[in-house]
Length: 90
Image (cartoon, rainbow, N blue to C red; front, top):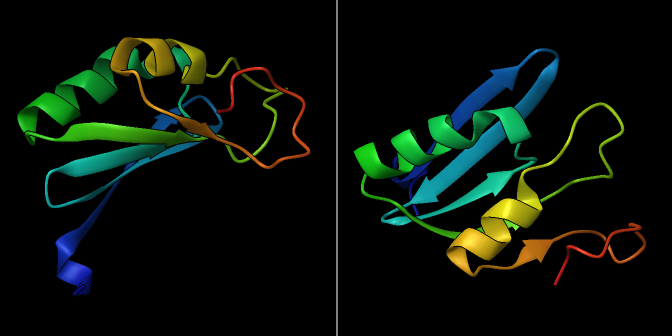
């Protein structure tokens, strides 16, 4: 894989950052923020990307995660550390 094949898009909501990584037509979102649902959808649609997974890097005390909503909408896994207290991860 060449670096130019991997695209990284940063999204910001207040002091919270999330990232959408894509390679070819597949994508994953890291730390999705509940307020950015439309922005993620627009970016995925505009770039013809298929969302394949979500990564939550930690339990978010500073914001609500969109992971559970995206998991149900796209029928995709949520990846979290095994010691994270969450019923969302698969």
